[in-house]
Length: 170
Length: 170
Figure: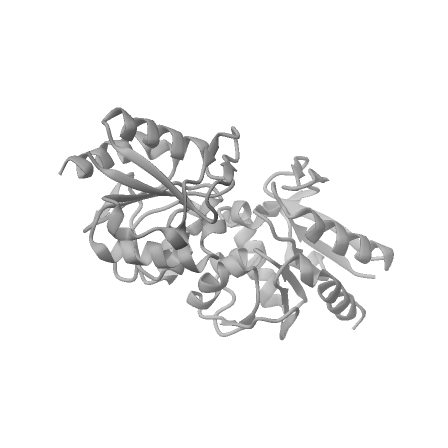
């Protein structure tokens, strides 16, 4: 079973966290929530889903996890200003282990400077940012490029979850 | 007195709208709120300030206004997916008339493709996006480049308002 790091902060898109999280746990995978500060409670932007941060990014090591999951909403906008989060993200993407990014999650990947030359999708508002970061934007429900798996938003959740679970089995 | 177009949608940063708006009105300037649909009420993300959209961007013409004001928060993230808003923004920036952009407002300027080669500032989370768009990011309270005036966020409001008012007098 996989140990999955979840990068999360305030105003995440509830369903983009809850649905994959439930599917991952149902298959026996473990989730560890990594954020700006250990012990803080962060809330979803639409339904107020509450998540407790288990570990600050500054104390987390990419080597301790088998996969990275980044939900969307405005959580990535908060996370991308923190250097520890950026270092963790960069180390993880470079490790070659699976990264599951949905909706606004590529914002974090852009600031971590890890998507140049990669095929990526994301929420429609950030298409230009993805292209300007040197990535190849692909308008599809699931886009896979080596270890990077991305989806556009809530409507893509079934495909995103199915493809992510497949990676965790592999 | 100037007629100022305000591009606004849900989850704008309350103070980044209310404080400049009050200062502009106090000096006798008129505000016209332009957004995704005429008549909708949009709310600020922290204090729930309510603003009614006067005109849909598709029915607005840059020629009818003397200046453009774009508050921050998550309003620009919503506005930048709308082609009419992008067309209006692009026409306005190219008109040479003053544009006042604060916080996340450059996100809209990025998708409108109008900041390459320009000096711009903005909220810390979008610094990389500003640079990737070909602009020169400047870490200052007010950055002026020809008709484009930008500020980083709420702490810069006094300087942002003072510099904007000065442009409206000029």
